Amino acid sequence: MSASVKAAIKQGLFTALALSLVTTFVSPLFAGALTTDVTTAKGNETGSDNILGGTPTRVTWEAVVDEGEQVVGVDVVYPQGSSFSDESSIKVTVLDGTTRMNPENTASLDAATTTAKVNFSEPLQSGLRLRLEMYKVSLPNVDGAVSLNGTYKLADGTVKDLGASPSIEVTYASVAEGISNWLDQQPFVQAWNSVTFLRLFFQPQLIVSSIPTVATGWLISLGLVLVGFPLAIPLGLIAAFMKISKARILHILAAIYTGVVRGTPLFLQIYIAFFGLPLLGININQYVLSILVLAFNSGAYLCEIFRAGIQSIPKGQFEASRSLGMSGTQTMFSVIIPQTVRRVIPTMTSEFILLYKDTSLLAAVGVMELMLYSRSIVSLTGNMTPYIVAACFYLIVTLPLIRVVGNLEKRLALADNGGGAPKKKRKGRRDAFSQMREEISSTTETIEAAEQKVAEVQVETAAAMAGDASVAIDTNAAAARAQERHEATPTDTDERGDAS
Image 1 (cartoon, one colour):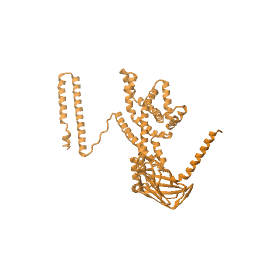
Image 2 (cartoon, helix red, strand yellow; image 1 turned 135 degrees about the horizontal axis):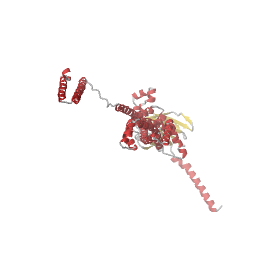
Image 3 (cartoon, one colour; image 1 turned 135 degrees about the vertical axis):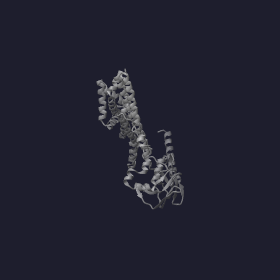
Image 4 (spheres, one colour; image 1 turned 60 degrees about the horizontal axis):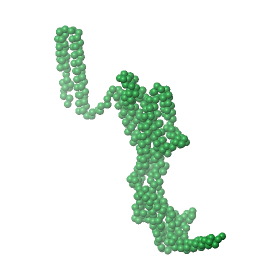
């Protein structure tokens, strides 16, 4: 070993020894009595682990007493904007390793200064861990990181500042969360929640707080069906043309498509698409794949709807169009399809409703839609209320559409029977008499016109048979007699008097 290497080793050993001596004798001068190493908060946003500001949560603060120090008191100060309520509480735990100790202490939460205060009758020795769990305390309603600070007191009366604690990421609370917190403090809500059934299925706070989250899933479900259903319409129409085609191969392909899709559950088709295609190396965005599966499924049902609608048009329509010189394509798209669409609109609307409800099956493969959003809240809270909220969102769409389908079916039935829209009944005695008078007057005028027409026909017939001048005289006489009968007929006012 060369002399230069030996010299370098000696210099390194001397430097290490010097640093060790400095650390041993100097570092206690700068050591703090408490080393804060844990500051956490429990997530309080419905459906996520976010920590909402201005919303009650649980905050845990921990620190370790350093070597050679004795702590008799700790004041943990919350940042500006924090708040305590009458239900806020604090729990003190002292640990020696894994052993729980029970030193006598007094703990309180000062709402005026938002400070958690703990005093011990006996000093905490070095190496002990102090844990403060503060319940239903609210952090500032901000977006960003917040930290706790404060002071501690030693056995000799010295008061020192605590170091900055680990920060807590806080999310700004929404209006819904604020309303939910307000409801949580109301006596009538507490009385409502005292009933087990109402608390588990209709908890007011959870209804309000879950609406924004569930609404996000509702918009996604609505978007999936609003994109998927229009794609299914041309697919179903093409399949319907294939099924009524004279080409046997087209008919067979359409029959296989509709038979397989309608004969298997949509749930199975979703599983095959989401787990089978990746095995083939085909990876598609889950929302795009969801739209394709819904369109493929609905297209088979629309195929049968369109086929039945086309075949319900009388064959005379085809023959009349062809006799006017229209081609088969012109006849189909200018005459048959417009009538078919009018007839199948109620059934298509029903298919839209079914497809909208079937989007809930996508939750089984992890697609974040209405059902999965509500299920995530239920798993977090253990309460069924989010499912009730989800049901209400489904009904927002389905109930109006069901009403529309009913009205369409009634109007189409009246149109097919040659009738018009039903007349509204008038209310009130005066309106009833007026309506009756109008109907009787209309009937009388119709009868008079019919009698006049019969008289004219009889005159014309007699004139044609006679063929001479005498018949003309009889014609005038017959017309005169008809006029006399018309004048002798009593009017509505003569028989009943003034109706008013």
